[in-house]
Image (tube, rainbow, N blue to C red; front, side, top):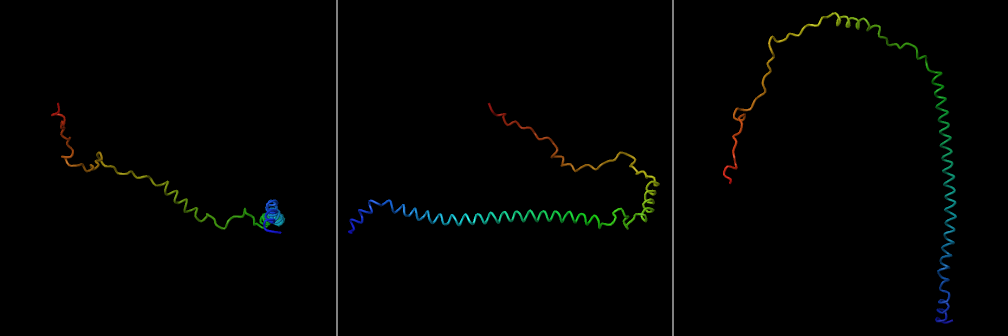
Length: 142
């Protein structure tokens, strides 16, 4: 077979080369797709396991909280018991303070005999207090 004959055959079946390349790509893709699907299934199973574990832990924690509340309520001492701190020693002192405030008569505040004169605020000098001289700038205009 000569080179010209081989080129003639290649011209007639040129479309077979891209089809063969696409077929090879399809086979590779199907192989990787199967692996990707397996990974996705494993990831979903792991996620479902995680969610189930989280819910179970939440339920255990809730049951533990309820048990702790019941334990604290049964072991707690009586809260109606009086506290060791009392105000009885301070009551006589409080009574004396109140009685001394009520028994004292208010003293009048001495007032000045005349009207109160407040010091004037400092005024500017007299030359600054005069009205300015009016000037007519339009006198010489027609």
